[in-house]
Amino acid sequence: MSDPSHAGHDPTDGHGLVVVANRLPIDVSVDEDGVVSWQRAPGGLVTALRPVTQATSSAWVGWGGQPDLELDPLEVDGTWLVPVPLSTDEVAQYYEGFSNDTLWPLYHDVISPPAFHRSWWDTYQQVNRRFAEVAAAQAAHGATVWVQDYQLQLVPAMLREARPDLRIGFFLHIPFPAQEIFAQLPWRRQVLEGLLGADLLGFQRAGGATNFLQTVRRFSDGTTRGPLVEIPTGNGEPRRARVGTFPISIDSGRVNALARTEEVRARAAQLRADLGNPQVLLLGVDRLDYTKGIRHRLQAYGELLEEGRLSPERTVLVQVASPSRENVDAYAHLRDEVELTVGRINGSFATVGHPPVQYLYQSFDATEMAALFLAADVMLVTALRDGMNLVAKEYVAAHSDERGVLVLSEFAGAADELTSALLVNPHDIDGMKDAIFTAATMDPRQQRRRMRKLRRRVLTHDVQAWSTQFLDALAEVHRTA
Ligand code: G6P
Image (cartoon, rainbow, N blue to C red; front, side):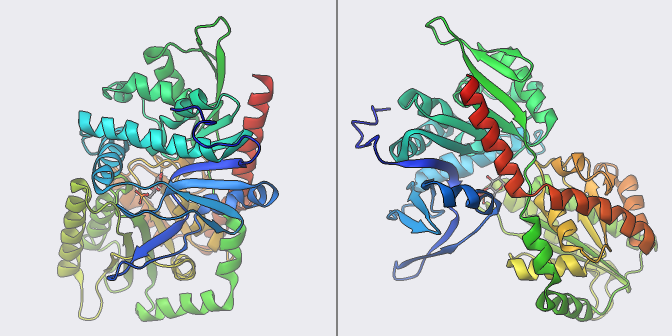
């Protein structure tokens, strides 16, 4: 990477905080005439950073979500959004290919086989370099740069090389796999070296942090002492990086407040009425992804109907599956399988006007989601592997009425915190059937007892607390390094 002073960077200006993420927090669309428009897509991270971005000049470096689109930087809510363009070929190789058909399945315990292609890796490096260059040009002297997720694992080292003055954090939103699995990656050493450019590396679960430290010992030149990694620098003094666990959360106060509004409560009642006022309303809400265990959940539900433990007339499962990564084959196949299974269950158990599965291949806004959460008696989160699963936390935050039961996979990061949920192993179909049955028939006192504990956790550990803890820890590492 070129010296930032040669790349037009003036160290007297620039931003005090730079977030680097694959996506910008906006949805960009291009109409038939090529006219570009955008709207805010305020994910958790935007909310989390609001207190910081209000106090410091901040930039967010990311892709606009459309190939071959040159967008000008724009200011949204006080943050300078700096688009990184990606060509159609780069989207295919860096985003759909290496990020979502190599790293994603590898880091999720090879639920789907990862594909290893050298050309994808080349493009991943090129695109990571572009993100690093744009970030370097935005950062003021001594700024904090916070790099997000598996799409950008090479950025920390690239940034450090160009801008040793920066304080660099990295957070992995997805699981970090066991070393035997990570070992499959032909470029494992380069990925570790890329990550170790950060001062602080954050993981969702303690298990992910431990896995990372093991892979560092095995496949890099780094040595570890507790959560510290010492990286040889070639000039005597090793550099230090710290590894920590920072379970991400949601804006729980906002979800809680939204679900208490008259509008959402009325909508929840309407939804139940539209569904024929079922005795038991089960809900699944997922990106349509093979990590989410949607097929396992449908299998368990179908068997419960077949065995008559749940009544097809008085039970309904609403499954929201939001479209995701549709150009990746594994996702297209999953869609076919899920839709076939839904069709079979409805074909076998529906009565006229009452299908026991309501399948929605759509995305909904926050208000409709809050109403669905509030309406549901049982929430099914049956991921085979998941970094955290924020839907589980949203369901809890929406239930100020202290009713409802969360069935939660032990393979979701949220299981470490939400221990009062009914925890399940989604591979154990019989165990999951028992848990769903228990949830569907749980008495209100028991529901309240569990929900209170869950709410205590979710309402006190929100996404603002998460980002504050991470950024404070990053400041601390940098001070003592
Ligand atoms: C996961 C990843 C995020 C990603 C999101 C949506 O939560 O950790 O980095 O943005 O999925 O996926 P997409 O490919 O649409 O960005």
